[in-house]
Length: 288
Image (cartoon, rainbow, N blue to C red; front, side):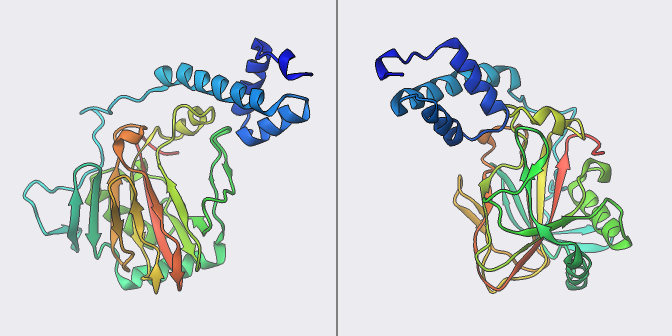
């Protein structure tokens, strides 16, 4: 097949879309096209043009509007600008607040004993962390996330029940609107590259994910230890870094599945020691 004879046909476009929606990486599709005789320049042009047009088709139908007053976002009671919130007798300090993105740093959300107990309970169950597979709605090991982790079921132990109730009271969000508590351990060099926690409606696997409780609307990251070096939670869009300090937590919410929320965030590499965190994702509806 000569370069002059190569034409980007409707059949080729349909094939490229099918490969992308099946979860194939663009670089793999490109290699397959080259192996079939397509010139590299023509193949790249076909990929870029076809995928751009497909995304343009999908985005209007999948765009997410604000949740509105009928479905409020998780939010602590900060109307009187308190410095400490007392949740079921437990004091939680307000260390930092930001409006856009909505980010709040809490001090002393967990006690030292609770942190130790969470690490001890989760340690035997840790395995390589996975991320959502956008093509299928399942999960997969991803090179961008180099931690070990596990999930607790809601209410699995008395400790988990107590912490979930405290989170619900703090953020004024029902316990059953939250996913199970996830524990993560980052060894030296481990990181989680910047990403969004919402599920992008453009991906074919999102519809399946949303069946279990709707869209994610908030994230709470609780630090179970203070690493010797590194491990900050970063928000690249706004230049914010939250240092991991045992017992403290960072909360952020997002009212739509769109980068305009400015909630792009990541876990910076651990440079010394280990970093342990407990993460709670909050859903729009009842998570089952």
